[in-house]
Image (cartoon, rainbow, N blue to C red):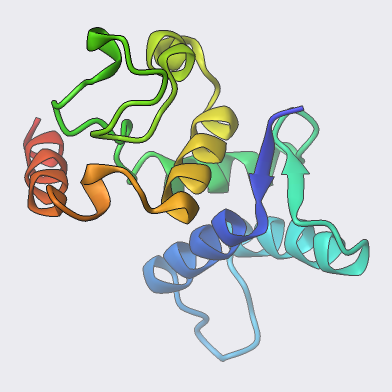
Length: 142
């Protein structure tokens, strides 16, 4: 199961709140309603991941719209897995994750992003953090 973490659901909710604010402080747009339902069920059942394959279609579409605004890859163009490292010093992904990245689902990619962000040991988060910003700016201009 590819899980979408609750923090990603929250980020998507905040994305839609900024894009389509409530006109009266009570009414929610359709994207927010769909995401809020998933979020509420996660809180009720005390789970921190939603299955991307069984998520309601409207919630998936709203989450995917937010996801499409995030960087696709954590790569900062310093790949040490090509030199035999099991985990890339640049981005923090394993050799298998780097190799299979194009075939991974959005939920699988976000799970990797969450892990490497929590680990906070890849160069993208410290020694070469400015490169990560540059890579993101380059991706946006494409």
